[in-house]
Length: 90
Image 1: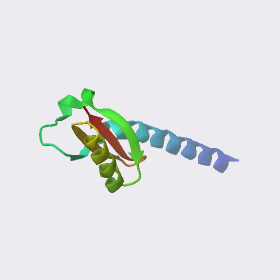
Image 2: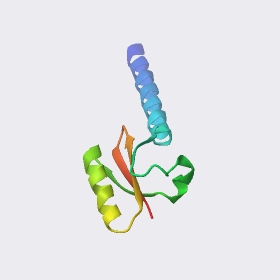
Image 3: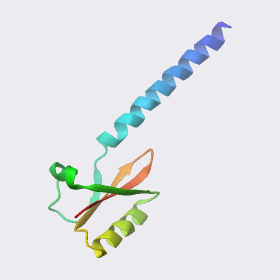
């Protein structure tokens, strides 16, 4: 009975730790690709999230599509838990 409660406590601790890491991961992720050298982190409010992609190549292809249709810039940002996030700027 005692080993069962110990396993339960360890499992609960692991779930809490993973939940905290998952919540902190998107905030700590840095941009992995920028098409223009003039963008900066200070302009983050102007970026619009578009979609999640499974790999960087698909994210860049999506960003190129948005550039062809009037957006000025895009960023592909890696989130280890979700994949590549495409964000565009008008």
